[in-house]
Amino acid sequence: MIRILANDGIHPDGKLLLEEADYLVEEDKIPQEALPSRIGDFDVLIVRSATKVTREVIDAGKNLKIIARGGVGLDNIDVEYAESKGIAVFNTPKASSRAVAELAVAHMFALSRMLQRSNREMAGGDFKRLKKNYETGTQLRGKTMGILGFGRIGQEVAKIALGLGMNVRAHDPFVQEAEISIQLHQFPDLKLNVTVRTESFEKIIRESDVLTLHLPGIGKPLLAAEEIAKMRDGVVLINTARGGSIDEEALLAALDSGKVGGVGLDVFENEPSPRESLLKHPLVSVSPHIGASTLEAQGYIGMELADKILAFFGDDK
Image: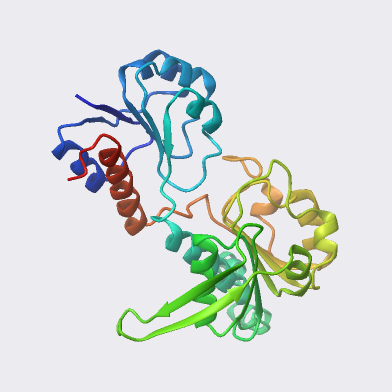
């Protein structure tokens, strides 16, 4: 029998698919420090971002054939070492793209109308005074959206931005162009195809009104003081990708100087304890690393995980 440890959980739809194939799925969380002593009992390890799959865990997983990540990033898995041991490593790049894209755009909307501030202040504030304070919001239509990273998530953001009437620009070192298909859910036969050609990193950061990140982490900030200085005054930055992709010290300085007009953050340098100065800053919209955490995305992730595991073991009939 195939034994699966879903250490960070799995959606019931995915679990049901696996159990229908007579696989044993355990969801009882094993603490990180105890994982090496227990992982040897399992053929498959499913994680999200909480569990770290280190060399110690991999070496202890004598029966491991698959390490699967419910989500896109693989930063918490030593992928190269696992593959050197003959262990397959999967993620679910398709399942959560729309959820992450919608969260990025939600932060853009919040910042454009200063909702992150009004939500905090209205409970104990003077309505008339606050109304005056929030009469200087902006609209997204006609603004230039710069997308750093033009894979699945970046392209989903582009679909929404084009639908809003924004000018979409993109940079990706591995993508030269992408055809963005805008389809009305209510009228599936109506479709608009737009080709977006990627441009240089320097051009995108200089010419964007809103800049959103959808690239994997590179071990250092992608946007530090030097890059921020080249941006348009009042630029809005969004990061729903990887904590540390924006230098937070440089970001705070740019917010205080007015160089950056607002920032939406779902990820932080120090999780789960982000800087309080960011959390409380009036120009910052925050969420607790929930990019893929919608009911729909969790179901899609569970199903994609199950499909890949079943296919690996030849039970995808």
